[in-house]
Amino acid sequence: MILTLASKSLMNRKGSVVLTIAAMTVSLFVLLAVDHIRQQSKQSFASTVSGVDLIVGSRTSSINLLLYSVFRIGSATANVNWDTYQDLIKHPKIAWSIPISLGDSHKGYRVMGTTDAFFTHFKFGKKHPLTFANGKPFKGAFDVVLGADVSKKLNYKLNQPIVLSHGIAATSFVNHEQHPFKVVGILKPTGTPVDQTLYVSLQDIKAIHANWQTGTLTNQPEAHEDQSHTLTPDSITAVMIGLTSRMATFGVQRHINQYEYEPLSAILPGVALSELWQIMGSVERVLELISYLVFLASLLGLAAMLLASMRERHQEIQLLRVIGVPAWYIFLVVELEAVLIALLSSAISIMALWAALMGFQSTLTTEFGLQISVNVFSLNNLAILALVLLATAMAAAIPSIMAYRSATNTTN
Image: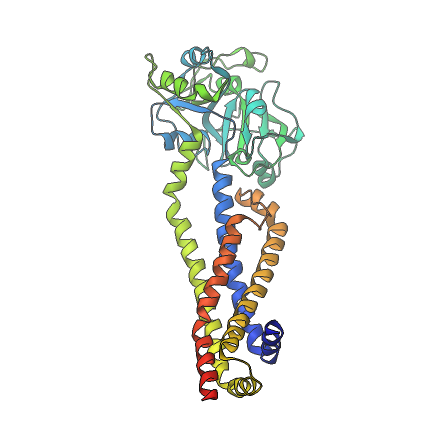
């Protein structure tokens, strides 16, 4: 009976109720969307690189090493000698390694020299392997594989010739025109920095720089296509390492950090990613604060609507008291009205958030690199909705008490 009475009371004031539901729905949508994307972004960020136990580079901070090796931001202070790399990977606990060499670019996108181990062992997200949308990994001399964003933004296709540039500036006046590359593969989108990188072999990196010294051409003989894959790199920028056992992580890390022939740093990518996320945490907290303020404004609007209806409902309360309805019952009716509004708003906002995520999931992945789950019924979101109902009941307390007093005075 109390539910029927509360529903009919809301229907009698459907104009103001609809506006209140709309305001609360918008605020809940913002609150849930910000929190859901915040949580998912954190998970997506933390899984930018997966399955890599250690990242090794020249002696530097963990965040700097992470930035240039994974996110292609900045540059290494020094390179790792090739002989050092060969010595390190002889460790019995190292199962595989991915050497990487950075320093060149193409129209603002970084070029990474590596081996076919990159396409075999590098994983992202929940250990998802790299897959090809078209083509295959580089095999021949001067082959290049494109990340999804590079192919899309520059509209490159298979077998298209491209010229790499010396250095990492967006606009370069020094190009490797003597060694044009051919596109042999295009990777599927990953939502990570992999999408914004071009991949060539380490030998090709050596070949295009065979006649370069300190950024300028020399008269040294160039490496021809049939010779490029016989070249040995002098150094690499960093190396990603997979171990035979996670139990060996700290032992191998200590071994590398104490390497006597060259100063090196070995970092755990998961730990470094967490440190980097904490640096950006202020933006996360500001967005969360804004969403809660928007919700607070809608709660105040709900309380104002219920308060404004008290004068209109004075006659209704008198009639209920005449037929024997107790005062506490009227208190519960007003509280239930507020809860019903909150429940309806929550349902609409959840449905709207799910629809928005379904519609924009691919866009968020390809354009912003965010891997957002469409599962909006997470424990965190359900906890938020429970708090919303509690806050709604508290906001409706004042008009409910006014209704109770009005009912009590009617009896007197």
